[in-house]
Length: 189
Image (tube, rainbow, N blue to C red):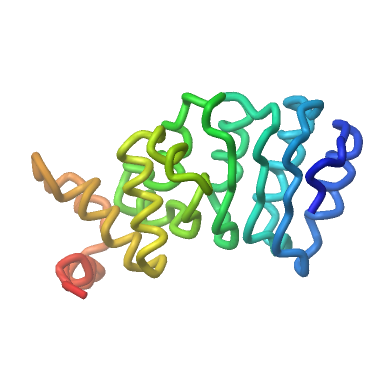
């Protein structure tokens, strides 16, 4: 917990390098740091890509995070299955589409299945959370209320089997897998 301690880019880059292989630390709070630039945030976002990092909760309130830093964080969460909370001040950010795409990549059923289903929270205050786009709040809620497998199922049904239904998503599925895929989506638990 380092709220109130002013960190520089050089220090955050060094911290990020240490966190890349630290599987013990679960919680990190480095709020109230307005001097960290995009270079520092980019380095920290790299920690989320590391399979050796054990971080589950990262708090970054009252910082200089902007839309570009948000994109770095979103892209780094693509393969992350540990981080449950990335607490941000959403007032400075407006490009939430990058995070929505990470939480539910609609490019294909496989891409949706491999989306991030563990990030559950990006704000601690309800008033800030309500400023987020509805779809992003929905994806976070599905992640919070479900197992990762159930969240994946909900996202696949919502992204590929609602509204104008198309058989296009089934074209690339292995014929032997097709019955199992349909049965999995149809289960109601």
